[in-house]
Length: 128
Image (cartoon, rainbow, N blue to C red; front, top):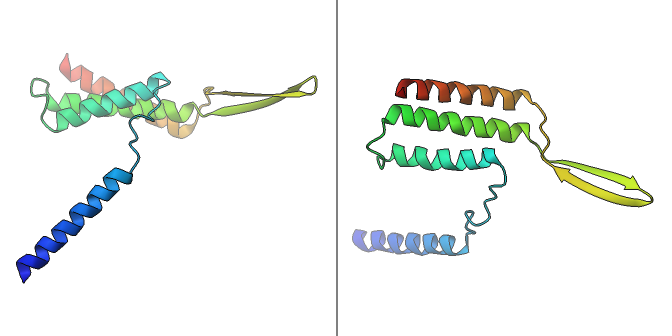
């Protein structure tokens, strides 16, 4: 009786997981790498996960993880410092909409950038 119950739970959980995987949208194709700081975040995250899982045995683990975290924090700080700004102007009775990522300093973004630069410096310094 106990084995039947466990196998029933296992089958139900597998079906539920399969349904979630099929219905869930894949975020990778919709990932927009339209600025340098988003590319830095993506690359540093991939290298961080690869190094943490032991796929990069030739690199010193501590320094690589520290440098990757620095890159992630730097990218997040720059992302915070570049918010989407929308401007609507009217010229000759017509309205024009302009959007862009103009730099606007924020305390959170600046702290993240400085912490990221510190981790990058500390990680690279130990490699030299």
